[in-house]
Length: 502
Ligand SMILES: NC(=O)C1=CN([C@@H]2O[C@H](COP(=O)(O)OP(=O)(O)OC[C@H]3O[C@@H](n4cnc5c(N)ncnc54)[C@H](O)[C@@H]3O)[C@@H](O)[C@H]2O)[C@@H](O)CC1
Ligand SMILES: Nc1ncnc2c1ncn2[C@@H]1O[C@H](COP(=O)(O)OP(=O)(O)O)[C@@H](O)[C@H]1O
Ligand SMILES: [K+]
Image (cartoon, rainbow, N blue to C red; front, side, top):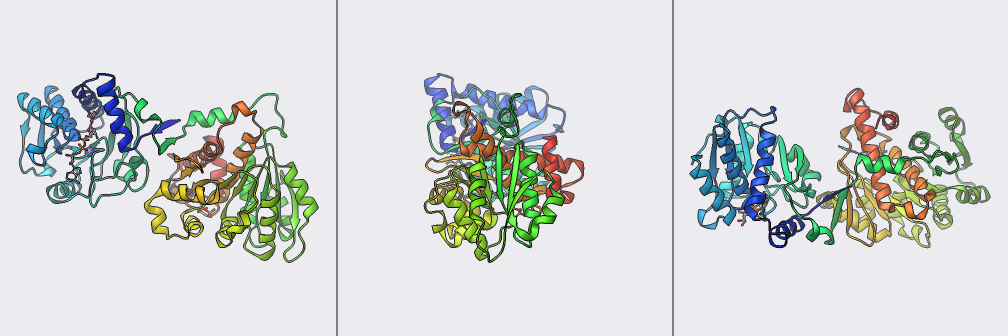
C-alpha cells in the first residue's frame, strides 16, 4: 500500500521535517537534487549539455542545486532562471548563489534545442495558478524543442492534486518526485505529462500528513498477493461463492465473461442467473458454471432466486442484463433480498440512474462500478464534469448511493462512502478499452468481495480496498495480455487469461 500526498499534505510533511525533526531545508533540497542527479547519471540520459530551468520557488532551488552538482561532476550544466529575483524563495536565493560560486553559467535567452537534457524546475507543488507570460513561453519552448526533460517533483504546470494542465505544462520523459507520489502524477492528464514517475526518499517525516483528509493511496502487487493467499485446508465452498445476474437474451457473452472472470480470480464456485435463451450457449462456453434461468415477461423464479441469494457470498448484478421490465424486477428483487456484498455494474447502474428508489431498503454493502458515462448518469452531471474531478465525482456517487464507487476510466479511482478516502489505480493501459472488459472487472470484483466475505473478521480488509485490489488485478491482467501482442489486439477473454500471469 502506498500513500499519496496532496500539495497541502506534502507541505505540512516538509514543515514537520524541518521544524519538528530539525532537518535544515537546504539538507532536504540537497538530497532532492542528489536523487535527480543519480537518475540523470544512470546511463540512459545524454548529459552532454544540460540546462536547468528554474522558477522563483524551492523547486527552482532544486534545479540550481542539480546544475551545481552536475558541474562538480564535470558535466556542462547551465542555469536559466525565471521570475523576479526579489521574489525568490530563500532556498532558491541560496542555491542560485552557491551555483554561481561553483561557476555555473547563467544564460539569459537560451535556445533550448542546443541542450541534450532540460531540467524542469520551474514550479513544483507550489504552483498556484495558470501559467502565463515568461513561464508559459518557457514551457512552450521546452515542449517545442523536443529535448528530453527530467521534471523535478512534478512537471511544471500540472496541478498537484488533480493532474489538470494549468493552461500549459512541461511534457517530461521522467519525473523524480520526493517522498511519495502526488495525485496529479497519477491522474490524467498529469500522468501523461510526467512520463516515468520515480519516487525518491529524501528523509521527509510523514506524521503531519497522516491524519489529514482527503486520504489517497494506491494498492500494490504485495497487497494483491497477500489478499489472494489461500489456506491449504480450504475448499471450493470456503474460497467464495459468487452469484452472477447477467445476460439478457441478446447478451449471453456478458454473463459468460463475468462468470469466467469470477472463477479465474480465485472464487470456488459461480452460479449464473440469466435469461432462458442463454441456457445452451452458457453451458457450452462455461461448463464450470451452475445456472438458473428467468424468462422475459414471465414471473420471476422467486423460490430459486431466494435459495441462490442465500447460497452466495457475494452477488454481481448488471452485465448485459438489459433494462427490460423483467430485468428491472429481477434487480429490485435481488437488491431487496441480498445480505452479502452486492456489485452493481452496467445495466443495473443504468436502471438505478433512472430510478434511485431501486436501492431503497437495500441491506447489503454495495460496490458500484460505473464507467464515466454511467457515473454521469448516476450523478445527473455531464461526462466532462465527472472527468474534471476524478476523486470528487467518485466520492459524490459513493455518498449519494451509500456505496463504494469504482469510477472506471483510463485511471480508475475507488471511493468509499462516509470518508474522504480514495484509491488511485496504477495498473492497466488502453488494452483494457475493449468490449466486455467491464464485465471482467465486475467478475473479479465479485470474486474478491466473496473471498473477503469468507475471511475471519480480524483479517478482513475494507470493502473499498477489496474493490481497489480488483481494479488493480484487472489492470495487471490487461498489461499481461498486452505483453503477448499489443494493446490493439487484446480482447476481454485475453484479459481473463492474463490473470494467470500477474
Ligand atoms: N524545504 C522544502 O520545503 C523542500 C522543497 N522542495 C522543493 O520545493 C518545491 C516546493 O517549493 P515552493 O513551495 O517554493 O513552490 P514552487 O517552487 O513550486 O513555486 C512556488 C513559487 O512560484 C510562484 N508561483 C506559483 N504558481 C505560479 C504561476 N502560475 N505563475 C507565476 N508564479 C507562480 C509562487 O508565488 C511561489 O513564489 C517542491 O516541489 C520541491 O521541488 C524540495 O527541495 C524538498 C524540500
Ligand atoms: N485508456 C484506458 N486505459 C486504462 N484502462 C482503461 C482505458 N479505457 C478503459 N479502461 C478500463 O477498461 C474497462 C472498461 O469497462 P467498461 O467501459 O465497463 O467496458 P464494457 O462495457 O465494454 O465491458 C474499465 O475498467 C476501464 O477502467
Ligand atoms: K517541476
